[in-house]
Length: 375
Image 1 (cartoon, rainbow, N blue to C red):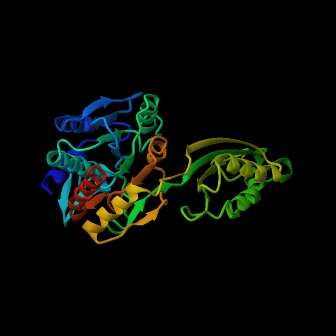
Image 2 (tube, rainbow, N blue to C red):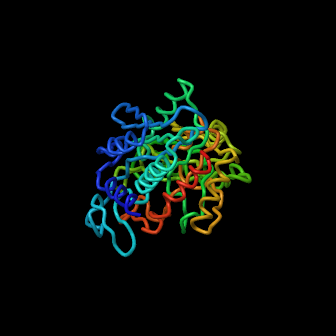
Image 3 (cartoon, one colour):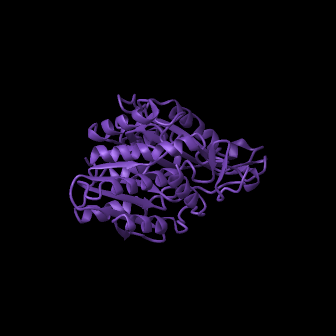
Protein backbone atom coordinates (compact mmCIF):
# COMPACT_ATOMS: atom_id res chain seq x y z
CA UNK A 1 0.00 0.00 0.00
CA UNK A 2 2.69 2.50 0.93
CA UNK A 3 4.55 2.63 -2.42
CA UNK A 4 1.39 3.17 -4.50
CA UNK A 5 -0.06 5.68 -2.03
CA UNK A 6 3.18 7.66 -1.97
CA UNK A 7 3.36 7.81 -5.76
CA UNK A 8 -0.33 8.70 -6.13
CA UNK A 9 0.15 11.54 -3.65
CA UNK A 10 3.22 12.75 -5.54
CA UNK A 11 1.30 12.88 -8.83
CA UNK A 12 -1.86 14.45 -7.40
CA UNK A 13 0.30 17.18 -5.86
CA UNK A 14 1.36 18.36 -9.34
CA UNK A 15 -0.94 20.92 -11.02
CA UNK A 16 -1.12 19.20 -14.37
CA UNK A 17 -4.27 20.82 -15.75
CA UNK A 18 -4.46 19.88 -19.44
CA UNK A 19 -2.25 20.26 -21.44
CA UNK A 20 0.24 20.89 -18.62
CA UNK A 21 2.17 17.98 -17.16
CA UNK A 22 3.95 19.83 -14.34
CA UNK A 23 6.80 17.32 -14.20
CA UNK A 24 4.67 14.19 -13.72
CA UNK A 25 6.16 12.34 -16.66
CA UNK A 26 9.74 13.33 -15.87
CA UNK A 27 9.27 11.92 -12.38
CA UNK A 28 7.80 8.70 -13.77
CA UNK A 29 10.45 8.43 -16.48
CA UNK A 30 13.17 8.57 -13.81
CA UNK A 31 11.57 5.66 -11.97
CA UNK A 32 11.08 3.64 -15.13
CA UNK A 33 14.66 4.29 -16.26
CA UNK A 34 15.85 2.96 -12.91
CA UNK A 35 13.87 -0.22 -13.69
CA UNK A 36 15.64 -0.64 -17.02
CA UNK A 37 13.29 1.20 -19.39
CA UNK A 38 14.44 3.22 -22.39
CA UNK A 39 12.50 6.45 -22.06
CA UNK A 40 11.65 8.51 -25.11
CA UNK A 41 10.33 12.08 -24.96
CA UNK A 42 7.64 12.23 -27.66
CA UNK A 43 6.35 15.71 -26.85
CA UNK A 44 4.61 17.70 -29.61
CA UNK A 45 3.41 21.32 -29.73
CA UNK A 46 3.53 21.87 -25.99
CA UNK A 47 1.95 18.51 -25.16
CA UNK A 48 4.12 16.22 -23.02
CA UNK A 49 4.25 12.59 -24.17
CA UNK A 50 6.33 9.68 -22.92
CA UNK A 51 7.07 6.32 -24.53
CA UNK A 52 9.07 3.99 -22.29
CA UNK A 53 9.95 0.41 -23.16
CA UNK A 54 11.80 -2.43 -21.46
CA UNK A 55 12.82 -5.30 -23.72
CA UNK A 56 12.73 -5.75 -27.47
CA UNK A 57 10.93 -9.04 -28.05
CA UNK A 58 7.27 -9.96 -28.33
CA UNK A 59 4.78 -9.97 -26.81
CA UNK A 60 4.71 -6.30 -25.86
CA UNK A 61 2.44 -5.41 -22.95
CA UNK A 62 1.68 -1.70 -22.70
CA UNK A 63 0.14 0.35 -19.92
CA UNK A 64 -1.33 3.65 -21.13
CA UNK A 65 -2.67 6.71 -19.40
CA UNK A 66 -2.74 10.48 -19.11
CA UNK A 67 -1.10 12.74 -16.57
CA UNK A 68 -3.32 15.75 -17.35
CA UNK A 69 -6.45 16.50 -15.35
CA UNK A 70 -9.48 18.72 -15.83
CA UNK A 71 -9.61 22.10 -14.02
CA UNK A 72 -10.68 21.83 -10.38
CA UNK A 73 -13.62 24.23 -10.64
CA UNK A 74 -14.69 26.50 -7.74
CA UNK A 75 -11.97 26.09 -5.12
CA UNK A 76 -14.26 27.27 -2.32
CA UNK A 77 -16.47 24.24 -2.94
CA UNK A 78 -13.67 21.74 -2.37
CA UNK A 79 -13.37 20.40 1.16
CA UNK A 80 -9.60 20.54 0.77
CA UNK A 81 -7.11 22.00 -1.71
CA UNK A 82 -7.50 19.93 -4.94
CA UNK A 83 -3.75 19.71 -5.56
CA UNK A 84 -2.85 18.83 -1.99
CA UNK A 85 -3.67 15.12 -1.53
CA UNK A 86 -5.62 14.46 1.64
CA UNK A 87 -6.56 11.14 3.23
CA UNK A 88 -9.91 11.27 4.98
CA UNK A 89 -12.38 8.58 6.04
CA UNK A 90 -10.62 5.85 4.10
CA UNK A 91 -10.33 7.81 0.88
CA UNK A 92 -7.66 9.80 -0.94
CA UNK A 93 -8.90 13.20 -2.17
CA UNK A 94 -7.48 15.41 -4.89
CA UNK A 95 -7.88 16.27 -8.56
CA UNK A 96 -6.81 13.24 -10.55
CA UNK A 97 -7.28 10.78 -7.67
CA UNK A 98 -9.68 8.71 -9.77
CA UNK A 99 -8.96 10.06 -13.26
CA UNK A 100 -6.31 8.81 -13.51
CA UNK A 101 -3.21 9.40 -11.41
CA UNK A 102 -3.97 6.55 -9.03
CA UNK A 103 -4.07 4.09 -11.93
CA UNK A 104 -0.74 5.39 -13.21
CA UNK A 105 0.78 5.04 -9.75
CA UNK A 106 -0.63 1.52 -9.52
CA UNK A 107 0.71 0.25 -12.83
CA UNK A 108 4.14 1.83 -12.32
CA UNK A 109 4.43 0.20 -8.89
CA UNK A 110 3.21 -3.11 -10.36
CA UNK A 111 5.82 -2.88 -13.13
CA UNK A 112 8.59 -2.17 -10.61
CA UNK A 113 7.59 -5.18 -8.55
CA UNK A 114 7.34 -7.42 -11.61
CA UNK A 115 10.79 -6.39 -12.85
CA UNK A 116 12.23 -7.03 -9.37
CA UNK A 117 10.66 -10.50 -9.42
CA UNK A 118 11.63 -11.33 -13.01
CA UNK A 119 14.49 -9.14 -14.21
CA UNK A 120 14.95 -11.43 -17.22
CA UNK A 121 11.23 -11.62 -18.05
CA UNK A 122 10.02 -12.72 -21.45
CA UNK A 123 8.63 -10.24 -23.97
CA UNK A 124 8.57 -6.48 -23.36
CA UNK A 125 6.78 -3.92 -21.21
CA UNK A 126 5.92 -0.38 -22.28
CA UNK A 127 4.34 2.71 -20.76
CA UNK A 128 2.61 5.34 -22.91
CA UNK A 129 1.66 8.63 -21.23
CA UNK A 130 0.26 11.92 -22.53
CA UNK A 131 -0.85 15.28 -21.12
CA UNK A 132 -3.47 15.82 -23.86
CA UNK A 133 -6.24 13.33 -23.08
CA UNK A 134 -8.58 15.74 -21.29
CA UNK A 135 -8.04 18.38 -23.98
CA UNK A 136 -8.43 18.24 -27.76
CA UNK A 137 -6.37 15.02 -27.99
CA UNK A 138 -4.63 16.05 -31.20
CA UNK A 139 -0.98 16.07 -30.07
CA UNK A 140 -1.04 13.34 -27.46
CA UNK A 141 -1.43 9.57 -27.74
CA UNK A 142 -2.40 9.82 -31.41
CA UNK A 143 1.02 11.34 -32.23
CA UNK A 144 2.88 8.65 -30.28
CA UNK A 145 0.90 5.95 -32.08
CA UNK A 146 1.74 7.55 -35.43
CA UNK A 147 5.44 7.54 -34.51
CA UNK A 148 5.34 3.90 -33.44
CA UNK A 149 3.44 2.86 -36.57
CA UNK A 150 5.92 4.67 -38.80
CA UNK A 151 8.81 2.63 -37.43
CA UNK A 152 6.82 -0.62 -37.37
CA UNK A 153 6.55 -0.89 -33.59
CA UNK A 154 3.36 -2.68 -32.60
CA UNK A 155 1.74 -3.51 -29.25
CA UNK A 156 0.26 -6.92 -28.48
CA UNK A 157 -1.74 -6.10 -25.35
CA UNK A 158 -2.67 -2.67 -23.93
CA UNK A 159 -4.22 -1.86 -20.56
CA UNK A 160 -5.49 1.71 -20.31
CA UNK A 161 -5.85 2.83 -16.71
CA UNK A 162 -9.08 4.79 -17.20
CA UNK A 163 -11.54 4.66 -14.28
CA UNK A 164 -13.72 1.92 -15.73
CA UNK A 165 -15.49 0.64 -12.60
CA UNK A 166 -19.08 1.81 -12.08
CA UNK A 167 -19.99 1.20 -8.43
CA UNK A 168 -17.30 -1.19 -7.15
CA UNK A 169 -13.74 -1.93 -8.21
CA UNK A 170 -13.78 -4.64 -10.85
CA UNK A 171 -17.45 -4.55 -11.82
CA UNK A 172 -16.67 -3.32 -15.36
CA UNK A 173 -13.98 -3.91 -17.95
CA UNK A 174 -14.20 -1.60 -20.95
CA UNK A 175 -13.44 -3.39 -24.20
CA UNK A 176 -14.25 -0.59 -26.62
CA UNK A 177 -15.86 2.81 -26.93
CA UNK A 178 -18.53 4.45 -29.04
CA UNK A 179 -17.55 6.97 -31.69
CA UNK A 180 -18.07 10.69 -31.14
CA UNK A 181 -19.25 13.07 -33.86
CA UNK A 182 -20.03 16.70 -33.01
CA UNK A 183 -21.80 19.34 -35.09
CA UNK A 184 -22.03 23.11 -34.92
CA UNK A 185 -25.22 24.04 -36.75
CA UNK A 186 -26.17 27.60 -37.68
CA UNK A 187 -29.68 28.26 -39.06
CA UNK A 188 -30.27 31.66 -40.63
CA UNK A 189 -33.49 33.65 -40.64
CA UNK A 190 -34.35 37.34 -40.88
CA UNK A 191 -33.94 39.56 -37.82
CA UNK A 192 -36.60 42.13 -36.95
CA UNK A 193 -39.08 43.53 -34.47
CA UNK A 194 -41.29 40.98 -32.74
CA UNK A 195 -44.33 43.18 -33.37
CA UNK A 196 -43.98 42.73 -37.15
CA UNK A 197 -43.95 38.97 -37.72
CA UNK A 198 -44.64 39.43 -41.43
CA UNK A 199 -41.22 41.11 -41.75
CA UNK A 200 -39.15 38.45 -40.00
CA UNK A 201 -38.16 34.80 -40.38
CA UNK A 202 -37.58 33.41 -36.91
CA UNK A 203 -34.79 30.81 -37.18
CA UNK A 204 -35.78 29.24 -33.86
CA UNK A 205 -39.28 28.55 -35.15
CA UNK A 206 -37.91 27.32 -38.46
CA UNK A 207 -35.50 24.92 -36.76
CA UNK A 208 -37.91 23.54 -34.15
CA UNK A 209 -39.65 20.88 -36.30
CA UNK A 210 -36.34 19.63 -37.70
CA UNK A 211 -34.82 19.51 -34.23
CA UNK A 212 -37.79 17.51 -32.94
CA UNK A 213 -37.33 15.00 -35.76
CA UNK A 214 -33.60 14.73 -35.11
CA UNK A 215 -34.20 14.13 -31.40
CA UNK A 216 -36.83 11.45 -32.06
CA UNK A 217 -34.94 9.60 -34.80
CA UNK A 218 -33.72 6.02 -34.42
CA UNK A 219 -30.21 6.12 -35.84
CA UNK A 220 -29.52 2.44 -35.34
CA UNK A 221 -30.38 -0.32 -32.88
CA UNK A 222 -26.87 -1.05 -31.68
CA UNK A 223 -25.61 -4.61 -31.47
CA UNK A 224 -24.29 -7.19 -29.04
CA UNK A 225 -21.34 -4.97 -28.09
CA UNK A 226 -22.76 -1.44 -28.45
CA UNK A 227 -25.92 0.36 -27.34
CA UNK A 228 -27.91 2.22 -30.02
CA UNK A 229 -26.42 5.43 -31.38
CA UNK A 230 -27.63 8.47 -29.45
CA UNK A 231 -28.10 12.10 -30.53
CA UNK A 232 -28.00 14.92 -27.98
CA UNK A 233 -28.21 18.70 -28.18
CA UNK A 234 -25.82 20.31 -25.71
CA UNK A 235 -26.21 24.05 -26.44
CA UNK A 236 -28.65 26.37 -28.19
CA UNK A 237 -27.87 30.07 -28.58
CA UNK A 238 -29.87 32.82 -30.25
CA UNK A 239 -31.04 36.36 -29.67
CA UNK A 240 -29.65 39.76 -28.81
CA UNK A 241 -30.48 39.65 -25.13
CA UNK A 242 -33.73 41.64 -25.41
CA UNK A 243 -37.28 40.40 -25.75
CA UNK A 244 -38.47 42.56 -28.64
CA UNK A 245 -36.03 41.42 -31.35
CA UNK A 246 -36.39 38.25 -33.39
CA UNK A 247 -32.87 36.85 -33.88
CA UNK A 248 -31.27 36.49 -37.27
CA UNK A 249 -29.58 33.19 -36.48
CA UNK A 250 -29.71 30.31 -34.04
CA UNK A 251 -26.64 28.23 -33.22
CA UNK A 252 -26.91 24.65 -32.02
CA UNK A 253 -24.15 22.38 -30.68
CA UNK A 254 -24.96 18.68 -30.79
CA UNK A 255 -23.26 15.30 -30.64
CA UNK A 256 -23.67 11.71 -31.80
CA UNK A 257 -22.26 8.87 -29.72
CA UNK A 258 -22.37 6.13 -32.30
CA UNK A 259 -22.02 2.39 -32.50
CA UNK A 260 -20.36 0.26 -35.14
CA UNK A 261 -23.79 -0.03 -36.78
CA UNK A 262 -23.42 3.56 -38.05
CA UNK A 263 -20.65 5.51 -39.75
CA UNK A 264 -19.78 9.16 -39.32
CA UNK A 265 -20.42 9.73 -43.03
CA UNK A 266 -23.84 8.10 -42.80
CA UNK A 267 -24.84 10.13 -39.75
CA UNK A 268 -23.77 13.36 -41.40
CA UNK A 269 -25.78 12.54 -44.50
CA UNK A 270 -28.98 11.67 -42.60
CA UNK A 271 -28.64 14.76 -40.40
CA UNK A 272 -28.38 17.07 -43.38
CA UNK A 273 -31.15 15.28 -45.28
CA UNK A 274 -33.49 16.13 -42.39
CA UNK A 275 -32.45 19.78 -42.44
CA UNK A 276 -32.98 20.04 -46.19
CA UNK A 277 -36.42 18.47 -45.81
CA UNK A 278 -37.47 21.60 -43.89
CA UNK A 279 -35.87 23.93 -46.45
CA UNK A 280 -33.61 25.54 -43.87
CA UNK A 281 -30.93 28.08 -44.71
CA UNK A 282 -28.11 26.56 -42.70
CA UNK A 283 -24.42 25.80 -42.41
CA UNK A 284 -22.88 23.00 -40.37
CA UNK A 285 -19.33 22.17 -39.35
CA UNK A 286 -18.39 18.71 -38.15
CA UNK A 287 -15.77 17.41 -35.72
CA UNK A 288 -15.03 13.69 -35.57
CA UNK A 289 -13.75 13.00 -32.07
CA UNK A 290 -13.15 9.35 -32.81
CA UNK A 291 -14.66 6.32 -34.51
CA UNK A 292 -16.00 3.41 -32.46
CA UNK A 293 -13.58 0.63 -31.63
CA UNK A 294 -13.89 -2.83 -30.16
CA UNK A 295 -11.05 -4.90 -28.76
CA UNK A 296 -10.57 -8.42 -29.99
CA UNK A 297 -11.83 -11.04 -27.52
CA UNK A 298 -8.56 -12.79 -26.83
CA UNK A 299 -5.98 -13.43 -24.16
CA UNK A 300 -6.05 -9.97 -22.55
CA UNK A 301 -9.73 -10.04 -21.59
CA UNK A 302 -9.32 -13.52 -20.10
CA UNK A 303 -6.28 -12.45 -18.09
CA UNK A 304 -7.86 -9.24 -16.79
CA UNK A 305 -11.09 -10.95 -15.78
CA UNK A 306 -9.13 -13.61 -13.88
CA UNK A 307 -6.94 -11.01 -12.13
CA UNK A 308 -9.95 -8.90 -11.16
CA UNK A 309 -11.84 -11.94 -9.90
CA UNK A 310 -8.84 -13.02 -7.83
CA UNK A 311 -8.56 -9.71 -5.98
CA UNK A 312 -12.18 -8.49 -5.82
CA UNK A 313 -14.33 -11.60 -6.12
CA UNK A 314 -16.13 -9.95 -9.06
CA UNK A 315 -16.28 -11.00 -12.70
CA UNK A 316 -16.31 -7.72 -14.61
CA UNK A 317 -19.00 -6.97 -17.15
CA UNK A 318 -17.62 -6.23 -20.61
CA UNK A 319 -18.75 -2.75 -21.64
CA UNK A 320 -18.34 -0.14 -24.38
CA UNK A 321 -20.26 2.61 -22.54
CA UNK A 322 -18.92 5.98 -21.44
CA UNK A 323 -17.09 8.72 -23.28
CA UNK A 324 -14.13 8.50 -25.60
CA UNK A 325 -10.67 7.42 -24.52
CA UNK A 326 -7.20 7.18 -26.04
CA UNK A 327 -7.90 3.52 -26.68
CA UNK A 328 -9.42 4.73 -29.97
CA UNK A 329 -5.91 5.62 -31.15
CA UNK A 330 -4.05 2.67 -29.66
CA UNK A 331 -6.33 0.15 -31.38
CA UNK A 332 -4.64 1.09 -34.67
CA UNK A 333 -1.44 -0.67 -33.60
CA UNK A 334 -2.78 -3.09 -30.98
CA UNK A 335 -5.45 -5.77 -31.51
CA UNK A 336 -6.34 -6.12 -27.81
CA UNK A 337 -7.06 -2.97 -25.79
CA UNK A 338 -8.96 -2.87 -22.50
CA UNK A 339 -9.58 -0.18 -19.93
CA UNK A 340 -9.45 -0.97 -16.25
CA UNK A 341 -9.26 1.32 -13.27
CA UNK A 342 -11.07 2.58 -10.17
CA UNK A 343 -14.68 3.63 -9.62
CA UNK A 344 -15.58 6.62 -11.77
CA UNK A 345 -18.36 8.16 -9.67
CA UNK A 346 -16.31 11.24 -8.68
CA UNK A 347 -14.33 11.90 -11.86
CA UNK A 348 -14.43 15.52 -13.14
CA UNK A 349 -16.35 16.45 -9.97
CA UNK A 350 -15.63 18.53 -6.90
CA UNK A 351 -13.84 16.56 -4.17
CA UNK A 352 -12.68 13.81 -6.55
CA UNK A 353 -11.43 10.79 -4.62
CA UNK A 354 -10.55 7.11 -4.59
CA UNK A 355 -11.07 4.57 -1.82
CA UNK A 356 -7.75 3.57 -0.25
CA UNK A 357 -8.87 -0.06 -0.48
CA UNK A 358 -9.18 0.32 -4.27
CA UNK A 359 -5.77 1.95 -4.44
CA UNK A 360 -4.25 -1.00 -2.58
CA UNK A 361 -5.83 -3.59 -4.90
CA UNK A 362 -5.10 -1.92 -8.24
CA UNK A 363 -1.35 -2.71 -8.39
CA UNK A 364 -2.03 -6.33 -7.42
CA UNK A 365 -4.44 -6.71 -10.33
CA UNK A 366 -2.02 -5.11 -12.79
CA UNK A 367 0.82 -7.25 -11.41
CA UNK A 368 -1.15 -10.46 -11.89
CA UNK A 369 -1.90 -9.40 -15.47
CA UNK A 370 1.81 -8.96 -16.16
CA UNK A 371 2.63 -12.30 -14.59
CA UNK A 372 0.07 -14.02 -16.83
CA UNK A 373 0.91 -12.20 -20.06
CA UNK A 374 4.70 -12.47 -19.64
CA UNK A 375 5.17 -15.86 -17.92
